[in-house]
Length: 230
Image 1: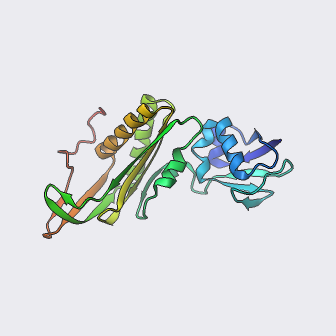
Image 2 (image 1 turned 30 degrees about the vertical axis):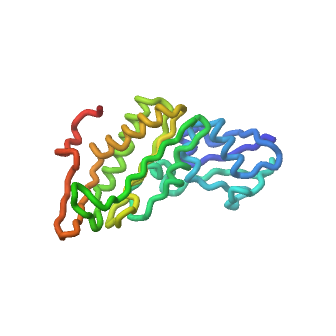
Image 3 (image 1 turned 180 degrees about the vertical axis):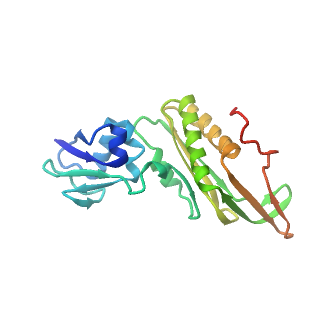
């Protein structure tokens, strides 16, 4: 069956129109509808995981059945769906969340990098880490990295979330997810993403050691965010 879908805000801007048409089997669910829209309109794929669907002006869950006569709308979050790919937060991080943000019908490989708090650094036992960030600029620099990656690996999708505040041993500090058509590109792009994040994103780490001393800085030497990308 053929259904008409209404778009709003960032979705309408990305698609360049306020309505799209989707061809789906009879009895399809909202989840199936979104899968079909992702395939038919790849420019919308990265936004859809953070959106909501309404059927006949009522919010619908992923298993709700879609009928041809339904008034269907896809609604981005009020704050905008795109920013969900790049996040500085005090809340625990989820790899599943980032996977959903980059997954798309054109991806043959999705690579995730998960950075955790380790117990020993240069022979010193760490009690906990404390992260702080210049959050607005950090998000903008994450977006810049995504643009650089798109230029190097056309079609790549990337999401970056970094946690701030005090983190205990084994807690997740950063997650990066990269989706590409092929696995070699995923490995290359994933490495580029984490190294570039360390290079230009204004996030600082303080280690509190067992003996009460502290260390703060870049483990690989002087920090130079103006250095060109490798």
